[in-house]
Image 1 (tube, rainbow, N blue to C red):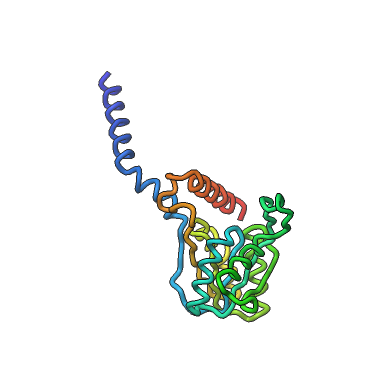
Image 2: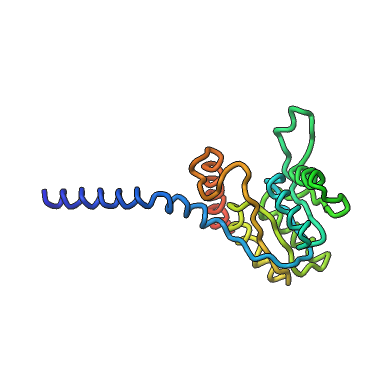
Length: 203
């Protein structure tokens, strides 16, 4: 009976501690995934596919601040939601369209309409950097994607003599540090953790 009482007290104590610390614990699921570098002048800004609006907005700010002289949009995934309007476009096209609306000249945008995953985009960006002798690049992606992008990109680029600067674009639809307060945030954090574990396991 005494052991059962001690076990009950222990469970209640742990439950109370978890409840008190629930906000920092939940927040840590997002903060672990956020890895961002200090900005430096670079040869180019690359926008990864998957968020042409937010990432495009951030890339335009960097370009206007003259952190790099060109913006390169990657992404070969289709946008199935636009099929109802008979619009055949890719994620890279959406990023370019957003940049043009933000006042970026078409001549300052390079399109690479390829890449359907972070791993594929690494190969594309690595080849482009080698071909154009880039020494430092800024890669713009979403905050929750920065950890995985850093894990995938940094070593291969470093081995090729290219310095990587990961820069995060804030999500316009939910607060990453309060992700549990919206359905979209819940889905985003869940998906990114699944992909992170998958990349750990496979690569």
